[in-house]
Amino acid sequence: MARTRRIAHWDPEDLVAWEAGNKLIARRNLIWSIATMHVAFSIWYLWSVMVLFMPQARYGFTTGDKLLVGATAALVGALVRIPYAMGTARLGGRNWAVLSSLVLLIPTLAAIVLLAHPGLPLWPYLVCAALTGLGGGNYAAALANVESFFPQRRKGFALGLTGGVGNLGAAGIQAVGLVVLATAGNQAPYWVCAVYLVLLALVGVGAALFMDNLDHSVEVGHVRSVLTVPDTWTISFLYMCASGSFIGFAFAFGQVIAHNLIAGGQTHGQAALHAAEIAFAGPLLGSMARVVGGKLGDRFDGGRVTLTVLAAMIVAGGFLVAVSTHDDLTRPSGAPVSLYTTAGYIAGFIALFICCGVGKGSVFKLIPSVFAQRSRALELGDTERRHWERARSAALIGFAGSFGALGGVVINLALRQSYASTGSSTPAFGAFMLCYVAAAALTWARYVRPRRARAAHRAGLAADGRAAGQLVRASDRFSGCSISA
Image 1 (cartoon, rainbow, N blue to C red):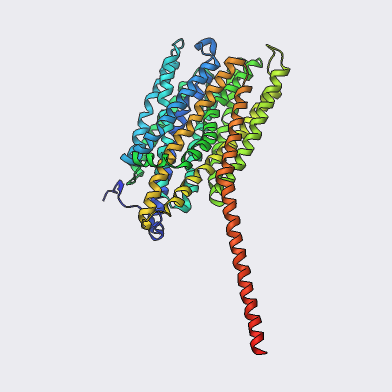
Image 2: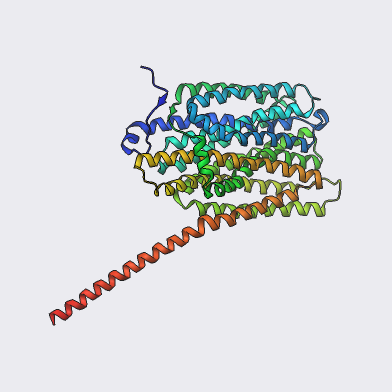
């Protein structure tokens, strides 16, 4: 008998059913959700690699133009996340994974055509970049789907693994670009696209064969309801600082490094190869750190982990400001960028990538806990309460993912404007650092200080209880002595 593709009744909190086989179903859907998201994420970042194959002398595009292409892809990826999260609930995780994978074949083929015809204006590249941005929507779709399959005690790990391995798509396509640059040179970008045409077909078929459609809802009403919750906006801003920075830096890192290498005297071909050798390391380490962030969120308080990460991001951002300011003040106009300056940029960016990865995991862990706490005030049975939590958690995952991805747009546009206005990235790095300072202050005020106060209050009550117990026991002993006397 053929296996059904739709599961009508699913309760991941039912421990007996979970151990009887539901965990295997959840694991299978997790694996293929990760696979489809990984490839879609790679297509989202396609133009972060393609621009390395586009010397200005041949295509006529400046670093600012290329950053605008990346910003366009980031913007569309942000805007489609809520519709994608709702789409996976409406059509089912399996159906949506298949459809969204096949749609990405179009911009991948279009990129081959565009790069084969240098001299075209910028707008066709912006249109193609917008279509690759659809791959960014798969992030929210996959996370919303996975979140519904797993129990509360496993959500942090499952979401962290999905986000982390999925985010490896950014490093994956840059690694493929590096291999192509090293073996075929900077005149054969079509090989990168060819690899991903095959991968898109494979994950589409795999999703059709091995995934299931789960009955769960991310309705417009659920999205509206979470918008009235103050934590929604707080978490979304924190996620913008973590995820938005990761997205923006993944698009811009290679271009910033290539820009500095060309300014240092390298040819475009040399700079592209050397930038590709470095650029994939940031998204790779950040994606691996995403899994660590989810596990830390499970083990420790998510607010404290997030605050620690933001403090580290402030330090890394300040380091980039110092490196860039030193270069502005000491390098004569027209002189090549020093090796030490380039190394400083690389070190600062790598540190930010790692911090962003951990932060993405820890911030997302706050989402289920927020609605789990709010659901305790509802007069609902256990099953209805868990359904209420899952629906609103999925809605907030979609909204926070969409809002957070807008940070990637801000990163690219800020760098573009900074280069255009001053010829330096210093103002942009300073603005990023100020955002991290604001996020750290907000995290302390909302998620660290109140919980410390509650913990201290509970400790005080416990101490009072122990003292009262000791007093009662002492009184009993005293009374006993009086009677015996």
